[in-house]
Image 1: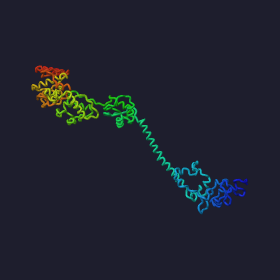
Image 2: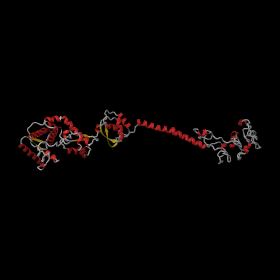
Image 3: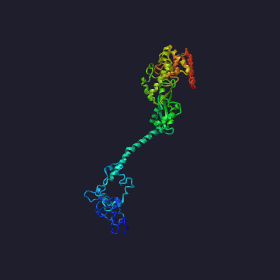
Image 4: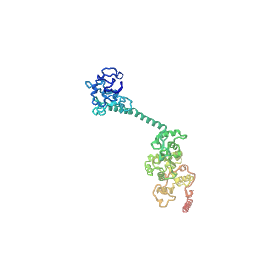
Length: 497
């Protein structure tokens, strides 16, 4: 037997007074309170589908571990007209739609796991709603909405991530990039590779140049170049021009290069005095980076060159001999325009129109005389004397008889024209035609133009460059002496002079 007052059944197999008696009342007020008729009769207990676990010696008979139908025997949840077995109440719909609905459905809200349900809640084999009851998961009442609650909770969390977390993350990344780009901009290291020509225009600042350099692939970012300019200790400023740079340069090195005028791209072409138009075009085609054919085409549109009116559309003699800087963006037309412009500046400096009138010549005649002096004179100091011989011969109606004009007519070069060459029928053959040729035969320089405007004083009508090596030229008014000069020239030429 068991001692009196024990929780366990006595010898008769009946539970002690703490458990419900035959009337269904409990005698232990500390557990359920005074009899109130709220509990169903013990017949409900007998109606359980399986009482294998309710034996008289079941040491878990305490109501804390009662079977589900006994635990929920409160008549507040009894089915109308049913057997008095309590059905688990369905959760209010608001619970399913709440923010964290379904996160923990064991009723504990913060328990140690969904699978740790109370033993009395699990039921037994054969119990309605027990683990082996495959028919209803919860007796005759509606199934619990556990899945729906969990799904709603997951959707809610995803909504928070999409609405709050994602925008914050994107904003954070963008903000970081903005700050990094401002204080730690992208920059290349080293002097770079390859070659690229960059133009600095008048008025360009470091900010303007920064974008241009990024577009050309010279620097990695505009901010890096601007910071390099701000941090530069050089007092030099950006100057217009074309600069030879490299791809993927460090910004500081790129800025320093733009401050160095030695890195400017300038194709230098020097046109000597006395060169013909054909020689000039050939030199430009070789040294300016522009094809000679482009210059030939440009000469056909002489109206675009800016020639003076007295040139009558002929550029020969008006492409001024000088040294020119050919920029990469220049065209054949712009190069020729620069040369004509240089001539116009020369004409203005010598006051060509007025000075020509003073010697009773037109500006065009002066340039022609200057071209003859340039071609025939051996030394610059001889130019005024050659100009005087021209004036003297023109004054007496004597043919000029210059070999240089015959060579020009034949598109060749030489010191003495042969008998056959002298027969060429050309207005430039000054042996056959008196007076000046139709136009200049080369591009005279400043000294020759000034000599044509201000010839030396003398009665010379003959001259011969007796020594081509030393360019010694002798002048005379005597034809006999002139013949002696010619013999001396022939001797020197025979000696390789």
